Structures are given as structure tokens and as C-alpha cells.
Image: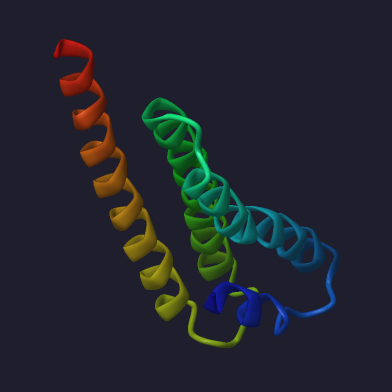
Length: 108
């Protein structure tokens, strides 16, 4: 993810270090949670784990917006925000698809 490369270029100020730590956590968490989703024990478990991914991606979106508004990094944050937005869209679509299948399987 581009977000990992971005945070390595943050300045050494206290606020930048704090934000870098937060983004490191929320920005890398979806990777691990998606791995867990792939090993889900049921479709409901799969949807739950995808929703955790989505939650972390949305937190990352918020932090990236903060970085851009505070001008914490001289590099262009737009590309990183776009990547995060694309990942959110992908996970949202996956949750909708999997949730729809859950509802259909509960009806049958």
C-alpha cells in the first residue's frame, strides 16, 4: 500500500509521529483482516471480517484527510487517498454481495 511509503516521509514533529502511528495501525490492519476473512468459518463470519476491514479503511481515510489539511507531508497525498477510496469501494461491494447471499441463504 502506498500509505506505508507515505508515512515514512512524514516529518519528525510530535503530531506527525502520532498521526504516522495511527495511520500505520489503521492502514495496515485491513491487510491482516482480509486474510482472516479469506479463512472465515461461515459467510456471516466472512461479512463480519470484511466489515472490520471497512472500518479500518474508513479510519485511514479520515487520517489521510487530516494529513492533507494539516500539510504534514510535502508529497502528494491525493494518490494515497484515491487508493484508499478504491479499497473502500471494493470492500463495500464485497460486503453487499456477501450480505445479499447471506440473506438469500437464510430464506431458502
